Image (cartoon, rainbow, N blue to C red):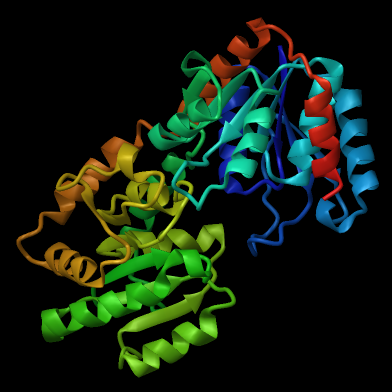
Length: 393
């Protein structure tokens, strides 16, 4: 069985997932674009364990006319001729093109998804469209509990849904955290303990409330309180910098910018705890990274990962992202001498070990085999018209 796994762009975690899958099956990774507009990642090397094809090696597919996007994707898929196609979601243009190709060629589809019913406000017309698109897939590979519930709500049979999509290279973060802790503390880090957050600086990451909560925490904790490191960058940076000044946090809130993959372990290795405060989040892969690094975590209950990898009081706590006071109190509790953070960190590593690249590989194998044994998709005129209309939007 040859399975083509299609992503917009390969980040480090895509390579880790596909390398694990290649140990179990014949996998080709289809990277649609050579670069991404969402993240400032350096080009990700690797992928020697599987065949890697880049559809648009000169840039991003979104810069091309729609007809050219379709021509390039179809050309690659025709030449490859996979037995099964796995594609992420139903929104991006390339995903719709892949779904149209699979429907035309009668190739079964694994729909990879980490969307949940509560991610955004849902409208009936859009939900109707999604249900039609989900019908084009035989099976689903989803993040966790809430994502499985949503794709089932959209019409996929429960027996056709498998978990394990949202994973990172746990071994890398565990190994690198240990190595960094065995060396001298880097000068670029705060001189004392700190909370760590890592995000794009965009509204849904809720960083304004995180700063408000940290200001309240600092008043409660006094001189012995921890500092805060905000990794990342984005359009909200000027606003956040002004808020930091207004709250009198310049000396204790550090904003060193976006960090490449190889720089992250320094910050994880020396942090006291990790905080993720998003008001909506499909999963929250940075939480995986922090847990694999051995950190206790404070995670918004609106993050898709929360039901599956956060055990309250065991490896951390969940919180209402709109409740600034509650988060401040949890930060105070986490930084207290009464909190056994070492035990929480060990629990984090144990829990996240169940969500590894091997978990993705096993889920993909099961989903692909089930898709291959299912009846081939029957695409009616309505689905064809829908795919055409969406590809013209």
